[in-house]
Image 1: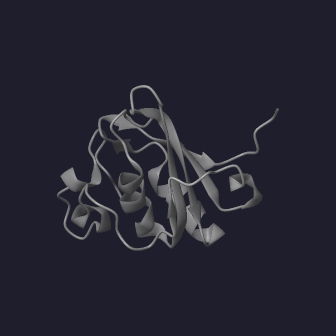
Image 2: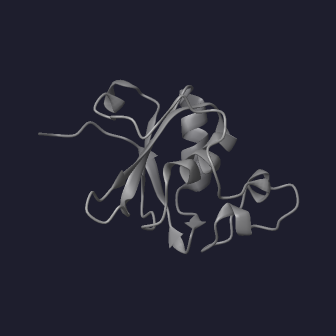
Length: 127
């Protein structure tokens, strides 16, 4: 799958591209939790950390982007409490580790909303 650098999936016009049909919008089926407390996220081996998100990125945006690679169990975007804007990173939990790896392989280094995403397996936070 090839996303043009600097464009969101809804701006992609390539025929046959599964992301070309996606649009930015409301919540879609496929995630059990959105915006939930992610303290337990590192217990799962299927958690992806996504960085270099724009300040207007929201959880439904990531859900739409990542669910094309498999079943997503939760999505979280860190938001600044004062401004309500994205802090530039988030986490996506997949049901299946193979789906998580496929998402990493396809989205890491790809353009999304005029920025280049960094997508990797999440690592436990060190205290």
